[in-house]
Image (cartoon, rainbow, N blue to C red; front, side, top):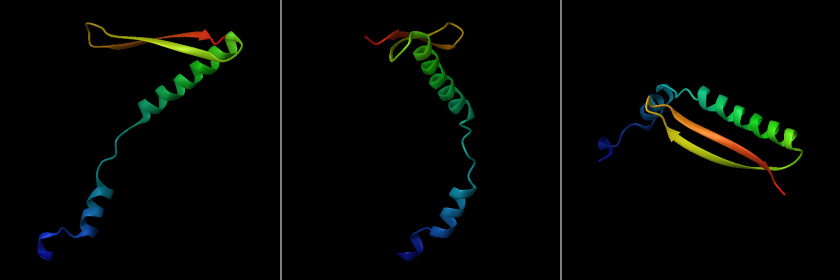
Length: 72
């Protein structure tokens, strides 16, 4: 039975050497989103609420429209 179990050190080595996912585009988008909130709060003079609209264009682009309003 012990022969059926994979060697943990081999398994961990395989996981450690597996290719990593590139999250740089995600991190850039999140940084831009945080900056958009800061800019909206600065321009509107206080806390804001956001509404979003999304759509997929015919060419396959995924579009997100953000509308900021001052929280009253």
